[in-house]
Every structure is written in structure tokens, then in C-alpha cells.
Length: 287
Image 1 (spheres, rainbow, N blue to C red):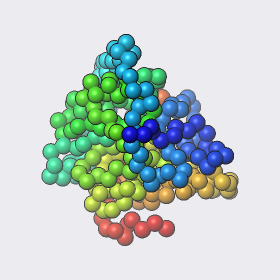
Image 2: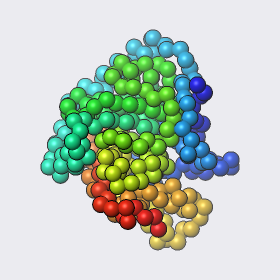
Image 3: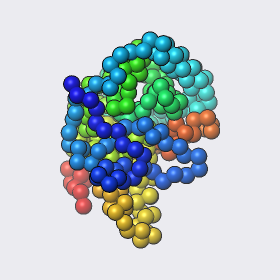
């Protein structure tokens, strides 16, 4: 097996044709620059992957597990988590999960773009929320995780938490052949777009529940750019990388997450649940 896809610097565009799309920064918005990113020209590929460091450092593993346990307890006892659970168990949201589940008993969970859980607290908080969701709800099944920045030590910790680390970089293009919850907080726009494109069919989209950046915000950002007539290469790149995101807005039910506390702003601000309900193929035509 070969090493992972290239991890880019957090610039919007580079001279060799690599690019990323990020939300406009506002307030205390701080992205984790280690997040999973896509390389232009490689979007169709699914690449075999192994950590660049093949050795598990037991001391680092123990220290990281301790940090994760602190985050788990911190979130579990927070007003943010109570509010989050109340929202998930509200009729509005629970009905969507039931619809996605259909006749199945569990939603598989796939975590893309979690970032380095050893280097940054924000990914640890995000991972902790996903693990606590699985512990809380019996209808959430196995958890699969991938980010090309994960080390062997981080992968071992994830396995210890009951997660499976993928050995292939799917570039976000996982087809939901069964009901699937994609947990993707603060990923790049391309990753959401790839996920939607891979599932661009009535049956597949109806099997997807997505936790990630607000699609409404993407739409507002693109509309704002063109309203001000700021036409540039970056604008055209944004539109290209969010084609399916914008097209999905017409049949997406989006529920914004309440961060409640400043303690969780960096990890979860501008995040939403997204549920897709296209009724016929005509709704999927791209204009």
C-alpha cells in the first residue's frame, strides 16, 4: 500500500493547480489547517493509504487516550451536549433519522476529515461528540474514520475507541448503499460535493444523513460574491466545487446546531444536520 493523498496548505489556490475552498472567516472562526483536503485532478481517484509513520508510540498513545477521555467527559457533562441531544430527539430531527433508516435497524457512521486528534483539541471534541452519539443511540452502528493526516498512533487510539480506520482514501466518494450518517464537521467544500456526487440518485440521497458545514451558508457566500460582481478565478472555482451542494439545496432539510457555549464555538459553529429528500430524478438535473 502507498502513502496518502497530498495534504495541501490552507491556501485557496496554488501555482501547481491545487486548491481548497473554505467558508468566509467571521468572528473567532478558526479552522484546523490539518483537515482533510482534496487535490485538483485527483478527485476521481481512491488511493490506498497507510500512515507515514508505521510505528505506534505507546507513550503518545497513552497521553492521547487520556486527552480523549477528558474531552468525552467534558462534552458529556456540558449544556452543549444536552441541547444537542434534545435537538436530535426532537420530532423534527428524529423523523428525518427514521426516514433515512427505513427498515434498517442502524445507521452506519462514516467520519471524513477529522484532522489530527493528537495535535488539536477541536478534532478531539468533534470525535468525542461522534463517540458519545454512538453510545447514546442504539440505532447508530459501527464507526469508520478517515483522514490522510492520521498517524499510526492516532489510528490505534481510534481503534481502541471502537472505530475502524479506513485503508483507502475515498476522497469523500462513499456511496451510501445502506443508511449512512456522514459526520464531517468543518471539512472542505470539495469533500461534501464529492459525497453528494457519488450519491447523486434518489435512492442513495435518501439514505444519507450528513453532519457538516451549513449548505445554506455556502449558498449565501456564493450569492454574495456574485451580487457584488466580484467575478474572479476564485469565484468560478467556488461555484465549480459546490455545484452539487447548491443543487441539493432545493430538496435538503437543514437543521442548524446550537453551540450554546463559547467553549464549543470553534469545533461546531456553522454546523448543521442535512437530510436529503429528492422525490424524482428530475430534481437532480444540474443547470
